[in-house]
Image (cartoon, rainbow, N blue to C red; front, side):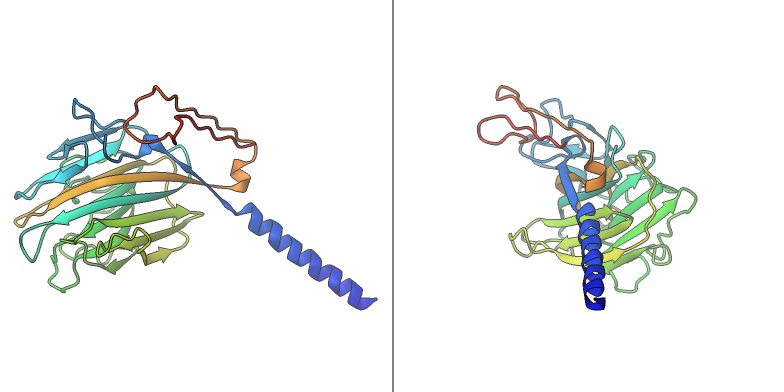
Length: 289
C-alpha cells in the first residue's frame, strides 16, 4: 500500500514538472517593425522603414554604414517606436573592416528607455543611458591587449562610461573576440528572456549560419520595459568601416503570455514591402488562441 502511495506521489511530482516546463515553452514571433534587412533596406529617398538614422550614418539597399573609415566619424540608427513586448532576441549581421592591423573605435547595440544621440560620446550614442549597451570595442584604450572585446554594460541613467579603462569596471560580462576584417560577415545574437541576458557570437570565418559560440550568459538582469532599439558606431584617430547588414528582432513569449492572445496578419500578393514577409503564394497568417 505504501509503495502505491509513493508511486502516486512520484507521478504527481513528474506531472507538475512537465506542466511547469510546458508553461515555460517559448513562442517566437518575427517583429518586422523592429527589423531591417536587404535587399530593400533603404527606400529610394534613403529612409529606412520604421527607423531613423543620423550623424555620419548612410543607408543603402544592402546595409547601413554607421561610421565610415574616416577620422572622427559618428552615426546611429534607432527604432521610431519602443518595444511593446518584454522578452526578445536580436540577430545582428555586421562587418567591421579597415586597412590597418588596429582599428577604432567600434560599434554598439542599444536597448534604452530614450533614443540616444546620433553623434554621442559612447560609440556614437549618448552617455548616461538607461538600459543596456552591448559594445563591440575595437580599440585598446587601456593598453592591456584585451581588444577587440564584446561586453554588456547596464546603466540606470546616472553612470558615465569610463573610456580610459574600456569600461572594464562597469561591464556586466563579456568575451574577447576578434570581429575585424573577417572573410564573411560577423554576427551577434542577443537574447533577453526571463531576466537572463545571453550573447552568442559568429566570428565570420565560415558562411555556416549555425557557427555561433557562447560569449556570455548573465542572470537576474533587470532591464526597463518599453525600450528603443539602436545601433551606433564611432571612429577616432584610427578608422574602420562599420557596416550593419541586418538587424532582425524576434519577440519571445511564454505560453502563459500567449494564452488569450490572438494575432492575425495577411500579406497581400500585390503588396510591395521592403522585407520578405510573404512565402510563395503571397499570403500568410498566424493565429493564436
